[in-house]
Length: 91
Image (cartoon, rainbow, N blue to C red):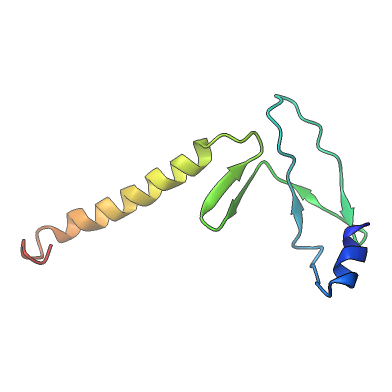
């Protein structure tokens, strides 16, 4: 059953221009086939962020951890700026 048949059967619609593909493999050189959906060629991704978690095609966490570090640095920078303008009890 194709994705089109499944979506028609279950009354689910997909936007082929927003759909992307990612091959998940631990091999160093994985084959990424060119996939078409409703005559639109899908973009192959190396990583994808979904619900706050960054998934990488080789199942490593490097990109996700770097994103967490950057987010933490931004919060720490804001808190450092506030430490002299707020009272200790408020801080």
